[in-house]
Picture 1 (cartoon, rainbow, N blue to C red):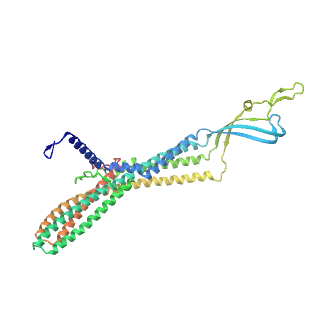
Picture 2: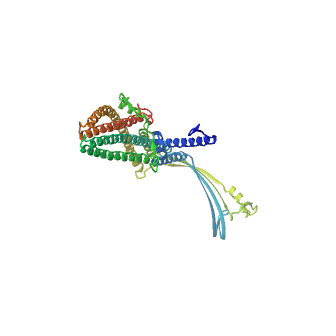
Length: 471
């Protein structure tokens, strides 16, 4: 290795190698800042506030389902009471009142209750909550899909605006080149000075148009950055894929075939179906309110009192009990144990027409969810129908615009040649130039309109959003 014709020292070689590696790393990092469509979608989904809120709602539904399952188990409650009484007191051994006594007593109670039958309301509540949880999960997926489509649209809008900026910049470059040619011809006396002024005015208009296009590009960057929940557009750049459209492309399938696939896959449709099932289960729960309710209860209690006396036996002569004050705490608790089991049957007779009102309201709610499901299906069909029609129209527009651009380019070259020799006026030259710019803009717009609509149709077929290939 040589530097300015002289051999490079070994130490210098190492330093240069390190510099090259550092510079390569910096270039690699700069290249890694370009976001692909998939990266944009994933980042937006990971950081969207609405998605996080829906995730919390899903957790809430999970807890509701768990609670309804646990409700099948018996409820158990215990109490412990410590009492202090002064003055007149009841001797719990003799059941006689004593005066001027200070009594310390303790009582312990445990009770359990379980519903044996209540019109299957508990089981139907579990079923309803499971439907609600599944629907909430599907709602979360639906929100993610909507965000993915919005990000894809914003991404393609940037690509479109980039092309429009490039087209306008190319036109301005051509105009500036033409200014120099015209100035030379004016200086040589071959063209009037008015031609130069007209071309310079056209350049000023194109500069303004370029600024407007650049502003539109900046706004499209701001839009996608906001969708991604980023704080600034600084150092943000998207990856520009090599996208080309074959004029022989066709939209595969038809509206009904795409809708048939989407209806079985789309989370908003499946969520609406589950909401309807949940409403139908609510009706079963309301009807369960007419059923008798059978419950089982068990109790266990014991207690202690410091005035309670222990019976040691009875006097053989008088027959009265022989008592002692030595009655330990643990021994009292064991002797005073009491437990029992009981059944309760509750039959609803009249409760202010509440059960019947609940049944009627749930029937109305079922009809409402049926309409919601029908509306979701119709909106899905209309969306697919519109996207299909737009994709076909955009493809036709692209093919027509492509031919128009070819014709306009040839026409502009011919007009430019005639303008260079003074055979056409600046007005005619500028008109030909504007026609070419409009044709190129329409070509770019129809191109990205077709890409987006085609990707929407693929999305409803269950194909993830990607710009790797076009069907």
